[in-house]
Image 1: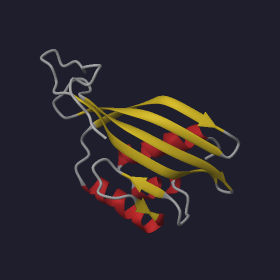
Image 2: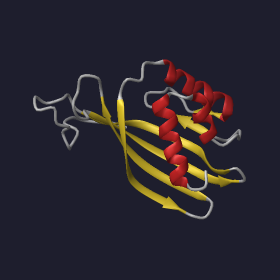
Image 3: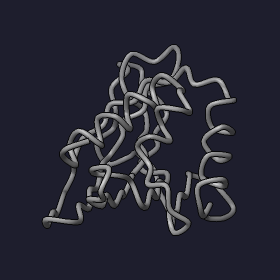
Length: 144
């Protein structure tokens, strides 16, 4: 991938397709890569653990719709750090009722831009209101 934006787009394409091969092409093939999924009890390190963690994610039914929105980004010639809010729409809902915050670090390597670190955590959560509208302030509490 020639740009961080292409790498990010490839990440979401692989995620939506639950395609482990495409997902692992986004990641660097290095022992120092790290992935932390929402609710995971620990960070997954290295290619084998990261791949195993994605296989577990993809083994669950992924019938949610995710709309990624870039919140912030910082880029140098070698590193790109991106913060994304993923708006989540669950089956039966017309609009998003929650979100996940994702922080990703991409690095420019010989093979192009690759994902080095991925940290996702639960963001705003709210039960759908009768109109099916996402509550902007999350409609509840979140803790870290």
